[in-house]
Every structure is written in C-alpha cells, then in structure tokens.
Image (tube, rainbow, N blue to C red; front, side, top):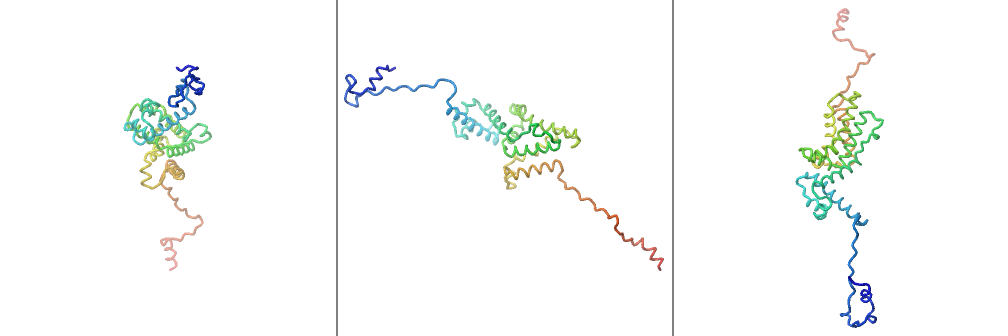
Length: 278
C-alpha cells in the first residue's frame, strides 16, 4: 500500500522532489489506486434495471419456445439464444430449466389475468345466461390476444406430468370452476337444460379456445388474421349464437288463412246445385 507521503511525492512537481531526474522517461509514474469495491447489498438502480430487463427477455423467449415446441425439446441454450443472451444468464437468474418454465408460466398468467377479468363485481346484476355470454366473450378475447396460453395448455394437457398437476392446481382448475358455477346457476334457474356441468363447461371452453391453438392453420386455410379485433368480435358472436340459439335456422311459420277470406266452393260442393238447375 502506498503511503500518503509517498503519494504526495509521486504527484509533486519535479523541481520539488529531492533527487528528481529531469528525464521524463525515468520520472516515477503515479501509483495506481485499486478501484473501490461496491459493498454487498442491493445493486445500484442501473444494475437493478438491467437485471430486471434480462429476466424479462429470458422469460419472454421461454414462453414463446415452450408454446411452440413444448417442454422437452427446449433447452436453456435455445432460450438464451432466442433472448440474445448467454446461457450462463439463464442459470444465473433461474438456476434450472424447470424453474425457468415455472417462472415463465407465472409471467404469462399474470398477463392473462389482465386480459381475462372474471371478478364477481364485473358480473354483478347479470342473469345466468348473460353471465355465461360475458365469460365466453372474455375468454375468446383473452385467447386471441394470448394464444401461447392455449398452445402450452395443449402441450401439457395431453399427458399427465408434474407440470400438468402444478398447472391444474395453480391456474386451470380455478378458471374452469368459474364456468362451472355459472352453468350450475343457469341450470338451477331452468335457463338451460339439466346437462352434466363438466360437459357444458368443456364444450364452451373448447369452442372458445382451440381455434387459437390452431391459429396458424386456421389463418392459412381462410386467409384471415385472428388477431384482428373485428374478427375476434365476429368469432365471439358466432360461438355465442351457436351455443345459445343453435346453428339451425328457425323454420318459417305456416301462413294462416285469413278469417274473412272467401273460399271458392269445391267442384263436388257445386254439383248438386248445378244438377238442380238442370
């Protein structure tokens, strides 16, 4: 460690230094002071912001990859590459692929919660049928804006696994039960037939979801954009119409005879009079 007096001598003018040499090449250089290390604790604001942004990039990349490929084919290296970061960043922030998947799902569901608001206060004052229609419309809107949820649900819902159990316990069951409760209410009010509740809920949620899980195929077949707000509203209207009114066109009622209309007698009825005239 360089002493204070030595530091003064090193930075003093050459004429004041005892025995100083006039040759610049031989003049002593200032001592290098090691940089001061930041004490442990919370990172600085700029570091914290950078860390948060890095996590977001990794999570968003993970959501896309897990939605498109499922869990098994995706590697932490692929996630890092998609995010434009090094693989070490994945392990630094999340430790393991399974934890990365869980945190990615939490981020996706937090966003979905903002899209699909099914709070009781939003449905207050509505009858059971209007509640069902409102829930269907919101579910379709949420799936249209966040199709990655449907794709991940399809990937994970095909085979039983610890990930599926976690999803059901933390997210899926609660969403289905919202529909179950309103279906029971509609049955109790005799607004819909007394059908198995789980069947009704499955029909509704499947109709409102699977189209967006097959988004690429449907768009290629029909040359449409399922993200278009007009298209989303049209699809919601159609699903609601078919579920509640049926797809068959109502038969036209038979025309009724006018009460005062003059009916021409049949040929058989006229025959006796005609014979009498003869």
